[in-house]
Image 1 (cartoon, rainbow, N blue to C red):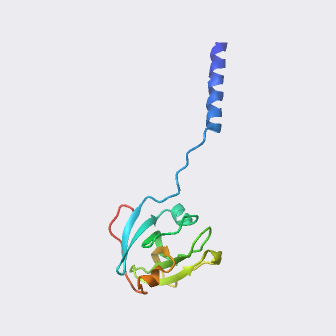
Image 2 (image 1 turned 90 degrees about the horizontal axis):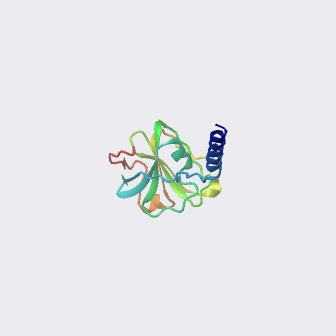
Image 3 (image 1 turned 90 degrees about the vertical axis):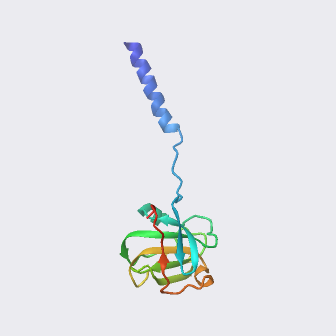
Amino acid sequence: MHKKYKITLLLLCIAVLGVYFYPQKTKSPTNTCVVDIKLGNTTVRSKIAKTVNERARGLSGTSPLSNNEGMLFVFDFPDRHGFWMKDMKYSLDIIWFDENNKISFVKKNFTPESFPNVESPKTIGSYVLEVPSGFFDKNNLSVGDLLEIPPSSCL
């Protein structure tokens, strides 16, 4: 009986130490959901930021975007969603869409140095798109252009 107690105690100690010292795997903070959206005559391959954590993290700490690459923020409710450049390494064009999915406001060349300033549109909407700085002008986009999102299980 005494020997079984010692073995049980030893196994319990090994298990506790194993949990304490064994490195825990953490999920990568990358968004795996990607959708090709259409904006004006341009297709943008967009990572989707739909959850609270994905939206909070956004593109912070990431490498610069390629041409025609972006992140589409999908909100649970329409509002005047504000954005800042916390922990960003590069500048962005940020495009807000109204309730009809039309461009309602743009902040061009939003730089990391602008932090902690927050930019917000005057209209409410449920989508915001972050793209490389200069994207808006390079693609001849205008306020009023329509955001087209294909049906997707991501949204």
